[in-house]
Length: 83
Image (cartoon, rainbow, N blue to C red; front, side):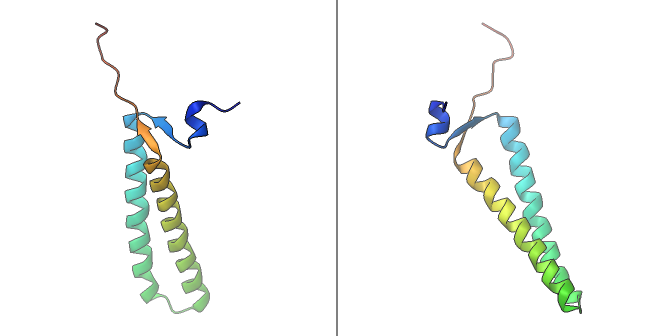
C-alpha cells in the first residue's frame, strides 16, 4: 500500500540526512573532476576507457542523488525541549 508521500514521488528527510547526501554529492563531483584529470596521464586505451567509465559512474550517481534531493522535503528539526 502506498502512502500519500510515496504516491507523489516526494520524500520527507531529516536535515542531517540531507546534509549527508549533499556532502556525498560534493565528494562524488570532486572525485569525478580529479579522475577525469588523470586521464591525460594514462597511455593504455583500456585504462583510459575504464577511467572514463568511472567518471561517468561518479557523475551519474551524483545526478541521481541531486534528483532525489530535488524531490525531497526537509523535515523541520524537532524542538529540543517540549513546551
